[in-house]
Length: 557
Ligand SMILES: Cc1cc2nc3c(=O)[nH]c(=O)nc-3n(C[C@H](O)[C@H](O)[C@H](O)COP(=O)(O)OP(=O)(O)OC[C@H]3O[C@@H](n4cnc5c(N)ncnc54)[C@H](O)[C@@H]3O)c2cc1C
Figure 1 (cartoon, rainbow, N blue to C red):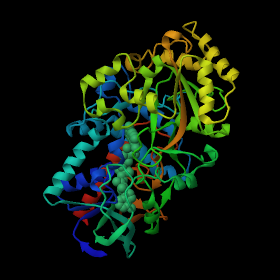
Figure 2 (cartoon, rainbow, N blue to C red):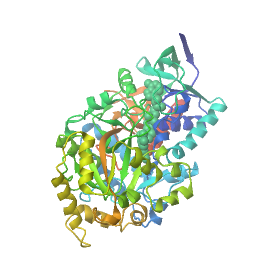
Figure 3 (cartoon, helix red, strand yellow):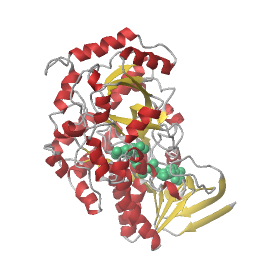
């Protein structure tokens, strides 16, 4: 085995995901020498962000104004606090981070990214619609800006800067370097130790071997931990699962690669760091098994429009306002109370064509490949090809002309006759009767009519209201939905300079954190819930802050 100890950098960054790369780019721009360590091979450079949909939370942007959306910092803050529900003593730093982040999203974020070449799809999406009162959770207006080029488009400027800095010797990229210990001397973090893993040529995102072929020890005046969340480690997700969301699910799909393993949390704690809000997590309820999995238990999230009928495992409609795309964690808590972990969408061809989008760069080749022609094709007839591929090959999709046949196949898919045909038919027919008038008591129907007064929804997101049993809208489609792990909302507690705090609330000298491992700042700037599109931006904001703070530390000593 090889072993080496070196002191050759101003800073060590653990993790070559978006947060680590933004921090590295800031430091390199300031002329600092940085070592970036990552346990994965070079082909997974960029971490989760590469796979992401590239949705960014922006407030009062030109894209919003062009879509006739009036947004403001005040409205965004109202939505943020209503969604976060900060209620703990340890929410002091998260709340300060949240305020700074909303200022960023309403201020320089777009211009700063634009300067670096990031561009946005012109139709702004409306994620997490809430459905409660003005001070409750959810986005009052659409704010989800999809990056032209999706996740890789967000990463590109930072990868380019870091690769450029590597070419001139300012950044040293060391893949297959897994950190297992932070070096602590006289109470200060002064380096990192770990194992060199065997070379691996698995494609991007595929789980790589953990065979150890050597060890390393590196020293630097500052270490920035940017190691991501815990969503690929189901044991840790279950251990942190809060009682308010019911029992931990027995079966979950993974919305993230296996390297999102959460190991650095305990490693940082061992060096004196404080972790908070680890019971706050952001998992989805619209997961489907990937027909072409890349990582273990690979699930894809449907980004649903609001029209599908959402039924629990026994065929009862989910209660108000748990409509598709309204309240992620409210829906998760409800599902876990039903005694079953799966649910169903029932919809029509007409709805799937207009309303189904799949989260992930590889599921949106038109946007990821920046193909105007491909994107315009979405407006035409027919489901987008990646959605069609799931209809043809996805284990969770069923297509039938008649409702009784559909219900029979739904029962066959779960292997248990959980759905009473009478229950499902009653829900479908009752909902269809509410379509007769342009006004109705059914709040989901009212919501989708209301949504179509927003230009973006009318153009590409919400189908013209119709009866599910209208033969012209068919065939009927049923989709079985699973719980899908994704983001961690808590983690290492940091102050506004991204300095990691210890149990006594004072900074641990030499230790910084950014991105998902820091709860995107402060140890949980989202509080209990997110407004969506806030994670990539959280990596950019906290990565930039960590890079700048370490740069300052080196100037002032
Ligand atoms: C499919 C998908 C869609 C998404 N869509 C969106 C979206 O539209 N909008 C949005 O805002 N967010 C989205 N997200 C979330 C967002 O992409 C992530 O939260 C974000 O990219 C996390 O970045 P990070 O740098 O904190 O961590 P990561 O990307 O996880 O990077 C951390 C890196 O650290 C390395 N590492 C970990 N531990 C060690 C160790 N001990 N030693 C060495 N290296 C280590 C890992 O190998 C990894 O490369 C999506 C995520 C996915 C997976």
